[in-house]
Structures are given as C-alpha cells and as structure tokens.
Image: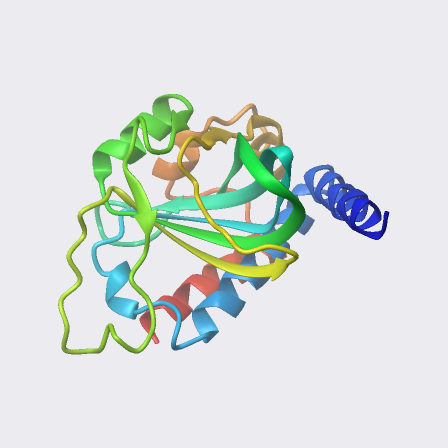
Length: 220
C-alpha cells in the first residue's frame, strides 16, 4: 500500500508540473539542467561541441506496474547557423512499455541531439525515439577524459539523474512532441516551434534569461 501511495504522489507531482505556468516550467527546466551540468563526472563537455540541439525534462515520472509508462514536460533549444542557441521552446515526452515489478521513478532527463536530420523531423512533427531517430545512453564519467574522442553513433544521446524505487532507463519507443500551448503562453501570437527556433528576437522574461545563463555552463 505504501508503494501505491508513493506512485500516486509522484503522479500528482507530474500533473502539477504539466499544468504549471510556462514561466515555472522553464525555471524548473533551467534548474534541472544546471544541476546536471554541475556534476563534472556525469557529462563530458565535448559532447556539446557537436550538439545540434538539447532537450531537458525535469521530474519525468516513470511507472512500472506490469504495464509501465513515462511522462514528462520539458524545454528544447536548437543550435543556430551562427553557433548560438535558439530561444527555448516547450516539448513533451511520453511512452509506454512493459515492466516486471511495481515501482516508480522520478528523474531528470537530458537529451543531446547530434543529427540535424532528427531535429528537422522533430520540428515538422512528433518523432518516436528508436524509430525516427536512433537513441542511446550518452558516454559519461571519468573514463571520458579531456584527451579522448567521443564517437557519436546514435542521433540522440541521453543522460538521466534518478531517484526512485527501481533502476532502469530506456527511451526507445518514447514519443517526443511539441507543447504548442506553453509556447504560445510564453511568447504569444500563436507562435510555432520553428519560428521560435529561427527567431533573432522574442519577448524576454526572467525565466528566459535564466535559461540562457544556464546554457553558458556548457562552456565552463
């Protein structure tokens, strides 16, 4: 019964995040990205040198109860032609799978996109990871030193920071889609994701500025 209660509590947390304001969700995403980037043993900085986009999903909920599933809302930025990062836009992550035990996880997920083709697919429509774009766990830890080479063989690399009742991480079969309503809430005027990604100037806010500052940690 305690496990059931814990599952319900985390589901409630996921719902609360999903229905929070665009500003709140952007700040949560900024904090999650900041925490992951500050862990110097987790993500080698050279991973970002060839990154074409980054997506961060704070407090993603994954449940395993014979029929499992995952849900998360987050933020994505793409690298522009001049090498700078675009304004952030909102995305959603969802999927289902089969689990063998009762358990629940709350995790922060970072996705690093290497392929421009996968980003083009994402901007045009939703994509299914492992089908429309190959995905794999990203190289991490002290074994990836400053002098070593990082060989990208997948289109998307994933990293996770986990707290919960069971261990296991897979994004194969998960669907990545746009959160149009949150984009409009943040920027207005029925703006579309591709317009945000290409824009040189959009209405700014404290949350947008904080996310831009967090992205600078990539280069430190």
